Length: 394
Image 1: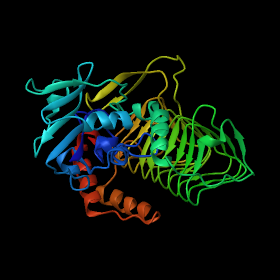
Image 2: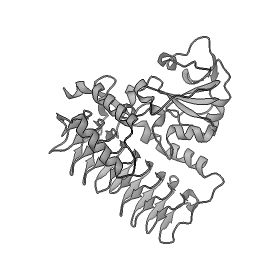
Image 3: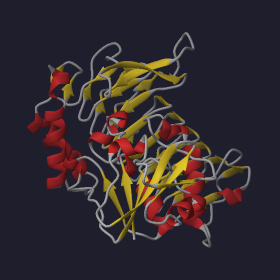
Image 4: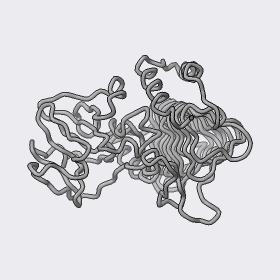
């Protein structure tokens, strides 16, 4: 048996983040969605995604495959409901397919995620469903994901001791420090949710944290950082300044003062000093954001929405991002005034094209600083994204 996380026909809806990974490899809490499914099910996990991503994110073969909506945030009840499926059944919630139980190499097609084949027996799912189907769902579901992930990860385990130099507001039992985690002279508030500090991560002096919050393995909060949960920063991130309800997928830097709110950053991003994001319009109205699915600015239904930044994108010092700005993969943003609300992938300064070989050279240098290799699969993915997005730079 195995779990296969499907993009469920949502690849274009989750761009720019799904240019470089499947839906199931996104992170809303401590774990990526795939890591959470593996922890809860104990089964191998693979991906049903775009062909050019499968070298790095392969599918999985088994005699029985549970093909699951890749954006479904799991908990024990969710995992149990999926694993109870028999071949020929589809798990539904209010008319929406959530998971298929298939034999051998059978796979669900994209239209099946809107309307399952009539020959499948429908099983209604009993509990609430939390799906990532748009980029902002990552920070909107962040608190629930952290709570679920922390319950799974810390069950039967004891936290490392928190230094007495810290001040705790709320239940100290909701703070969990992994091996080697360091937290000194900071204020930790668990009134609204738990706080998890990953292995060898560091919270420097003077930080103020309100849960729910997760700081990934080897990540750092810089001195005096102000973090409003729910927020989750993946492995090797460096974060300072003020952050509110945001998710950083991993390996990215927001190391300086400046505000990041209701935003999602991909991997290997860097925000220059005093970069600020607007997350609320002066009119308090609905934010529009660029949609790769329609090729236009579209209403999001959100009052609070900041920056959505794809992998390997960068901003220069004092950059000001408007509400609902979408920065593409390998976008290099600098210049005076507000940049456009859609900054195309592989753009230089928001207007000129960023040569592929130069962008790849920068990617390699950035990753080397974290002792991570730019693999052949990474190069193939970035090259494909460059060619897929040429029209945006015309």
